[in-house]
Image (cartoon, rainbow, N blue to C red; front, top):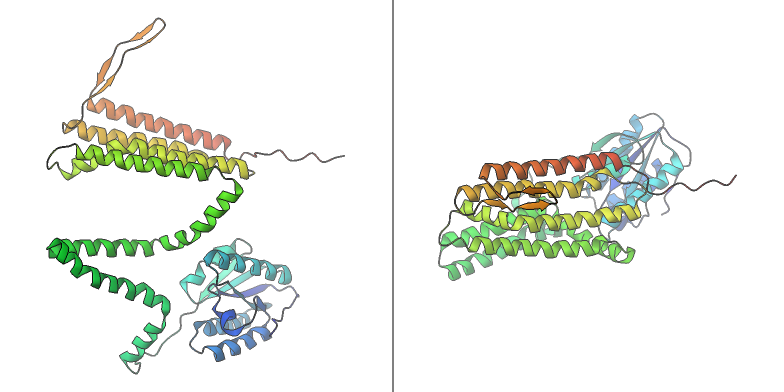
Length: 387
């Protein structure tokens, strides 16, 4: 079936979004699909292919919204199945095609899931969005049996992988940990830590970011970005910082307080970790200078912010350790520059804290000044037009 498209401009275009690409996968219809007749035909095709698909309700809602508006048309855009990045790019390209054909003054977006809602900013960057209509399908409260619910749950491959696989691993690992440690509390603590890490991993969307890493690395390698090298250097400096921090904490003696262990780790590792962040930020800034037409203030300010935070973290960790007797005072050596001679001096804990905090504050002010002065500066002069 070929999607029918109207080239007449409309005031409002009602766009139904299918980020996961279920509609073309189940119906075989290419997207974008535009026009009331084409969308109505698509609803029938999708309903026959999968009556339980919520996309049927989303398409019907899009038709209803278009009927309620004056001078409105309806369309469907759908993503690809080869990853979220490709899916979002496909939707963006389809939206551009619809805007070129219909030239709407604004759009109304119809979605049926939180996954689809992530594409609203993509559409909003191209055309004003008057509203977002999220379709929630009402289910019968008195379902025939719990078996039906379980069957529907097991039929969802994504839910099985997200719920049953971690649960099975926990049930297998827990008795093994009890046998190895001989302690129920230790086994429960380890399992709880793993579950917490998994929840953070899914909740913060780390899996989505990791899925984009290969494409980003491939792009960086083939485009000659400086950040590839600086990221490797940053990773090495971070490892050195962790190693130095662990060594410093291990030299404290027997049974030191937990606060002192953490503070010592920060005191020893912060300089290296700050250098790591500075290397990464510098590489990103260099890439911005090479590839962009303008310098963004955020990239200019980031290296100064990293150094400033490093000064402040070092200041407070040094103060705590010195007051607790785990670190000596800061000795400033004598300085002689020509006729000027400054005697060596020893800074008290409060003086050391104040000096480092002020240094961090000054670096931060310098960063703000530099970013406000050079931020948004054009890096390439426009070509002269021949008279």
